[in-house]
Image 1 (spheres, one colour):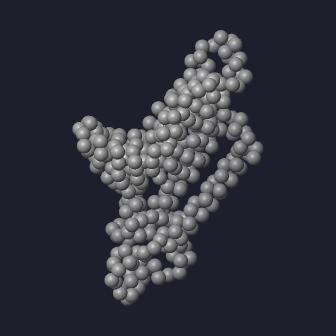
Image 2: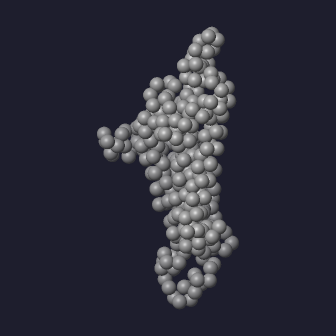
Image 3: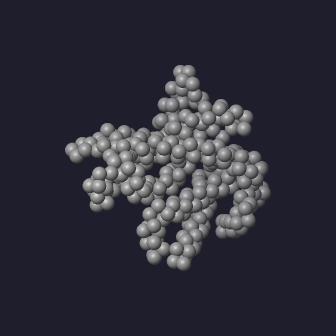
Length: 321
């Protein structure tokens, strides 16, 4: 019962967070210099032309009235109509969501499948007085190098030299699955570098903390094999910080996808939002940011559930609180 109440409280907090995000993004897009009328009509448009365009899209109404009209529609699933393409925003986002979802999922898979074993390996082989220095150096570089630098360098190398992978453009999965993978692997690898480094570093620290626990020492004293100790005693107890990090990584990858999609010319949500910002397409920007916030909040709730299943002590503490 306590756990159900806790989840109910989390749901209310999540709803309040989404409401706050909606207010902030609605106000922010209207505070950007150069409104929709100036962007569409140009600098030489007359006042009457600007007024007519504002009236056509309801931009002449008070800001609170505009927000209430938009929020009421969003609650019913209507994200409005793109002010540029005149098509429903939900259809536009739905057409681009598979590209961003595939890019993000591949990047998360690479980060977890490579980062977790690398973190465990560097922790198990660490020695006092400098052990694991190479792993810390590589993870530090991976965290520090920006995506746009890696993306630009990758596009240049794979465009200049025939290295077997596409460095731009997108092939739909339904048309050519192999071609789709070739077009997505490079941007996914670029996007995963930060997440991989952060995962490896977090896993290493978590494993090092678990290795000094008494039950690990007892397992060593019983003569258990190192591989058995790692699998049965270390990984599960060290998994909670890594799982928690996954939610943060997912949010970061959604943000990093903006740059990667633009650099590799992928028709995803990120590049679509960038274009909408430059065109002051308010409905698209609002819906895109709200969708990203909703994904992040849902990921956090799922991570809380997963952590409670991995370590029941944490779930009990959460239910008690």
